[in-house]
Image 1 (tube, one colour):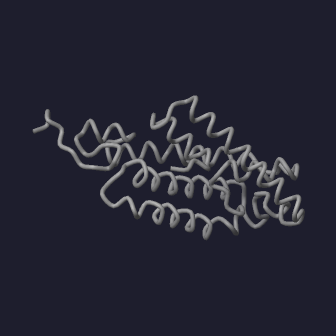
Image 2 (cartoon, one colour; image 1 turned 180 degrees about the vertical axis):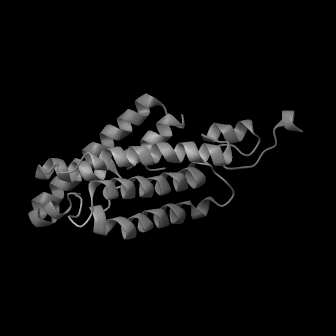
Image 3 (spheres, one colour; image 1 turned 135 degrees about the vertical axis):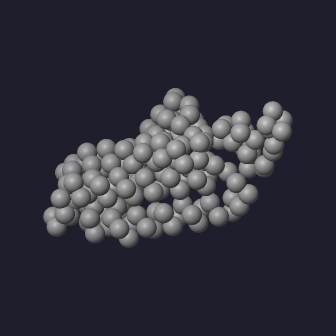
Amino acid sequence: GGHMNPAVTFALIISKNIGIVKGLIYIVAQLAGATLGAAFTHAISPVSAINAVNDVNSNFTRGQAFFGETLMTFVLVYVVFSTAVRKRDNISMVPLAIGFSVLLAHIVLIPITGCSINPARSFGPALIEGKWDNHDIFWYSPLLGAFCAVIVHYLVTGEINAGDQEKQGKGDSSGAVELDEDAV
């Protein structure tokens, strides 16, 4: 699958679904891609680029923004783990489920923060525009939400990575169900 969000990649690293080095390379690439995208946007429409910088709406507190970004990132990462990582029979619905979680996050967060749930999405425009107000929220919140999603997913399913499915006889990396001979 595509890795576009450092919070999701962080969750995959701490759950041992990808290695640390590979994950860090992905995160550097995500930040570079976001920066290039923001630079391109600034080049063709400077006003649009300025409006792309995440910040906390003055009608909300930093705490509300932090909570909202954490919660919505939690939802996104939990859905990713329940669908893309925990492969099951109906993998054709994975993009739809993830897309709906992103849609929900945008509906909730656009009025509050402009909706980040992705540190790279916030980093690129902030770097290009030099606007760092409340930028810490757009790193700490998604990483906390991702961490919590990994923990809750494990508590609910008993699985933390795709390898757990194989060990428990629930499937393999292709999503096929296979019985564990020791369990029979």
